Length: 449
Image 1 (cartoon, rainbow, N blue to C red):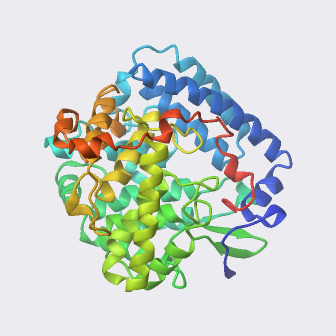
Image 2: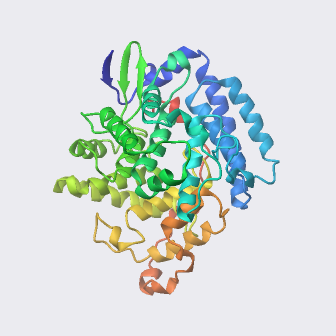
Image 3: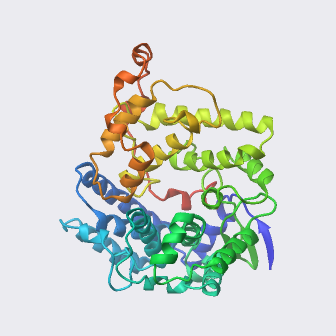
């Protein structure tokens, strides 16, 4: 089969939407129905979060349902899952989801799919690693990737989607598994912890080398990016994906090839829609901004002066948008249910972007010598808002770690009073967000393809 570089599909030429319609001629109407309804359910989940009610089971069911609606055409399964999600709202105590399953060793109580279980588990392994505690049960669910040959075989199957035949776009699950494996293989502390304490995976040097070699083989030599591949009409189309590229660059600490191509592709895609580009419905988004900023951080030593100047200009624009639109004056972030699975994850990515560009810590400002006198005030306010959430939520835990344990106790007096008096009002404080179709990009041109 020939391999063709596919960027953004338009209308009937869009490979993904076209092939979903080939699988199910009524695909678009059915998908929009579920998209609308899940958007309404996401509002209910957000309300629970605002009142600090622990909804870990409901959140897993919502993520699962969102994935089914966004990446499959499996409507009977989605119907059943939506019923389970609705019923879960009456489950007052959902704290059991934070414990390990004795059946398969995962923390994915409400998931059936491997990548969801892996994603939920990797978060808990980080916590156990920090605490120096071993998992109580073996991680039997890791059997599909337990050895290097098994892992390679599993990834090769996920790499290429044949939507017209299977009704399934494997982009999300492939990306999730790569992200989790990258953490196990390339984060030294987590790798050492897993080698010592985690039963269910042979994480030796051969395993790590096999994974690294696989990633090198699937990197696009023309653009430097990574992404999912699709079979359609006898051809294999490879897509460049910002999220894939961010995770691989990040977890490998920038030790990747084709840096000149990565830098060029990243800068050239600034006006494109996610997942190829930076934008979400034509606007910035803290999640994508965080991805871009980290790619720029690792790519900085490889940039020419003109590329650094353009990257600095773009980071400044993203920061202005974050502080002036996404962040409210009280330290809360404007929710975007079209992009995030929960209100907590919205906070996490807002904090992550601000942390990555050094807004809170001058030592991290690789792109500028500019000072931000209002940063301690906003850092304090965000910290206090995070304290209102469930302290056991993984996104909240990670956001608190990034913003600093003492953020909520930072004194506003540490900011120059003259500067504070000139602090601009944040437009996000008065923003009223319009709830739009949550997964709209799979059905619209200039997005997923």
